Image (cartoon, rainbow over all chains, first blue to last red; front, side):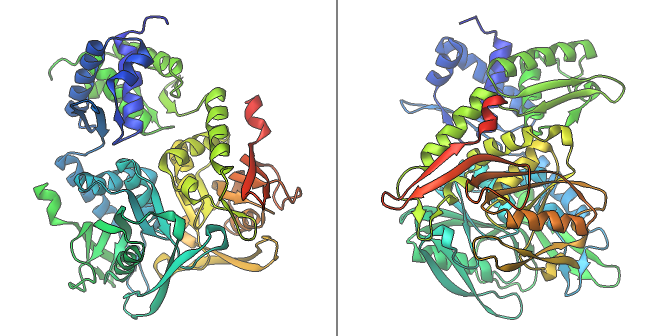
Length: 275
Length: 275
């Protein structure tokens, strides 16, 4: 193999590590890929770690030992989180987003790949130590941000449906109280083969009012003998204060809406300031 | 500012460019970020382009002129596409995936962030020159791959729903023939504010049998005065040969299923061999 220069190795390693966040690469994988000595790759990784740190582009962590290697995590700094979430609040507070029934139009936010990536990175950064086996969401609006959270954690996404589908095979179906004001009974279904008993789930959704849908997902996981290691949402409504699920990590709080101006009041959650 | 070494610049530039595919960065953005001369940044970019090319990690393209700069596109090589799609076929052909009604269980594939990223990159690579303004999909299963296609193109994702929702505001709702064998009339809805007349849509879905849902999305776009510049799916069923939409790019072809063994026959589409 033609001798590869450090510059080229660094560019390639950056792309490989950062495009597969939270995945462990052994030094041997890189020594084979580039035909370089372990000591050389170690030096490369130190340079890479320093550069990522300096420009607030995530963290490269070395894992020691026989099963060791290096892991990239796209953990944003507190400053970056505060700035990103305040930007988001300003966008959500622009007049015209409040719909009849005091609903807030958020589709452009929840379907933006960039924003979902950042939101997913922030949500994931709270749950690395809980090591979830998959991210669960309920169709439809939470899927993009749940997908990006799953990507940041390097785990699969699992999508609960409103009803079971022929193309998903045998399914477990539960009833839950939607708690969207009307306390309607809704159904939620998940293919039996989607998860394995004993796994750990991280539940992610776009929005929480009373927490009914989240509670439904918790109940669904019980049916599968799966433990829930965390629950996160993009926006939580301030009211009602009492939610059906405790300990939900929310990025933003919807404090209320002004019907006259058609503007919402949205603020980042307190915890981001003490990250 | 402390002087930044080429190594560190290269690592940071790789992360920045590759995490926002298809986005134009001017040289000035980098000269300001790193406090380096334009000629230095140009050299960096040449090194980066060569490294990405050498390790098949996508393409860095320089755009000349006053509005010029540099764009990263995660275009996989033909070899990588062939290898990725053949891997996918082998996974889909494993016995046990065929469900009653000859449906193929694909949720683990369509919800895998890595696979969706690769599939999105391949689908996007067919449509860069058509410059779509957004990617449209119909809930639910196509959302992750459509999201990753949108990300590769640096455009928003738009999700059509089965019905209009109070939290999406006024919507356009159409009827379409699902064409899933039963020729049922289904409905499809999209929030009025989701798209703008005159825009260009790329339609992406996970699966096509007769093409009824895709045709529905084409019809929906007509209602919005949006032109469709392309249609792509992950898997197309070989039968019926006549689809309701022409010119659909499919990654894989589902040729049929063997009910006895519970195994499907899935092959990559021909076009990947002549990319």
